[in-house]
Length: 210
Image 1 (cartoon, rainbow, N blue to C red):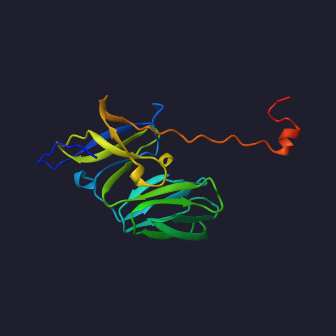
Image 2 (spheres, one colour):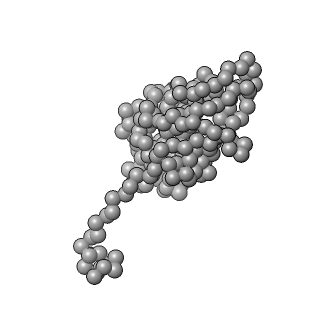
Image 3 (tube, rainbow, N blue to C red):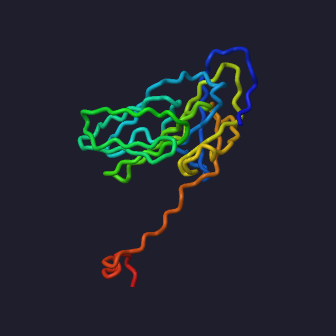
């Protein structure tokens, strides 16, 4: 939940928020959620998820339900875009940089995007009518627009390491820190299972073991 001190002044102000991971390092692509009723950000009805260097850009984006999301292809190779998510199940067949197909995201939830051709391409579109959502950059920082006079003490924060449900977002207390508000979430990168060496690697002792 969010704690605010109400104010009759509705002039917008910009608040800088920094989100840290459990290890204290900046958390990139964290979604900071505030009650839409308390936000001064104007919602749009169109968003863009591009494809650059075999990656979706941005990795995490947020829209209201009913928004058209456009999927341009800025690479010089063909891409496929699909999702099996409950909030939006769709597939865009292979297409080139000359096409800009769009999909209407008409149901709330988290939509996980993939490409059948390039397995490393993963992105997330958060669809919500209840929250205004801002996403942190590589320094773990994002900006929120609030009515002037409001004081933000808590936010909810979601990251894809938490899973694909917004209900898993954590409530985070913010503290003032050098001109910004800082909060820390208890989330860390998932542990990667060590891949068993292939028979060829074992035969030629690629790891240097005797």
